[in-house]
Image (cartoon, rainbow, N blue to C red; front, side, top):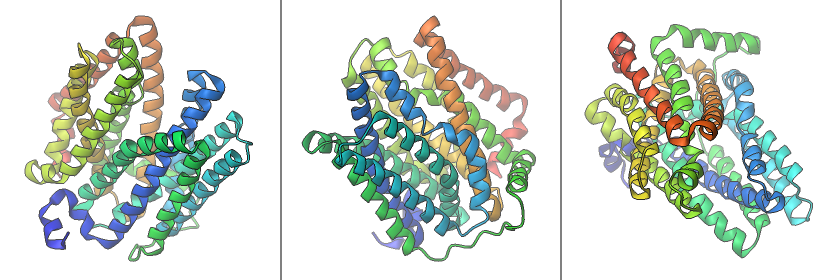
Length: 411
């Protein structure tokens, strides 16, 4: 597709930039491999233990380190060449994935090994993901940042749709070990892409500055810059009130709608499809309505859509609702991330991204646990719908009582 054609399709505009296209291609291939591993390990742990709590508990190990380590990852990423820093993190992920594959091929894979590697993977992701976000922001101009972050979300959702399907095929035809090997090899795509990336400005944070001082500076900027403060507050609120729907799809399908695993797969697929479609349309929508106005409407509507999903009377209604919810969820998160990255100096981008990631994972972990625990006692629909409507009320009150807070979205 020509550069002229891409320039007309604003959602794809960031692909005009060679470095971004390289990074996105490598990340997309690696992400498909990662989702293949997620499925393969889920199958392995479930078959070996026969207990769902083990499967969920091991999956949670990849998220817990972010609550503590993300700020350190942001401070480190702002001190070094981000391209090389991301390459180092990718190399570590390659080694961890290779370790799992080796254990599987030699017959030495155990649930304990899976748990340990999952935790280490969570640590690596926490320390290096902020650098990846900052790297994307540094290879595109400000006017194409929303397009770049939307396309990054799109490739993530493509991986979430394609990876499990490919993983299931590989596991059924060749075994868990081959799915793990494919994931390990997929990290090479990122390393090759980074080897050809050029034109990335070096980080400007002084290395003589302590990590704690670097983290404190990022927190100070986040508190004092109204747009960033609003974005981080929104990220935490969305993660706590809305995001648990991504993990509670089996609960919706089995306990609320009284269906089976096939319904769970349909709900997950519909959510991913909605997110993908929204990612491809995000640039055009932002150009037509304004990036700030688009985010404002997403913040006001996502709570209502989440409530409609949880109160769905049937599977077809739930599929349509979660398709819309997946779209709004993607547009909201991308809009909040763009707001952060567009209002922060280049040398602080990774630190602000790390604070956003920390709040996202902390809010999600607390929200999914609390909503799940209360749902067992008070009812799934009641608890989840109240959480969704609480977010709607919060957004409306903030919009009505503090209109200046929303005004920063347009600047």
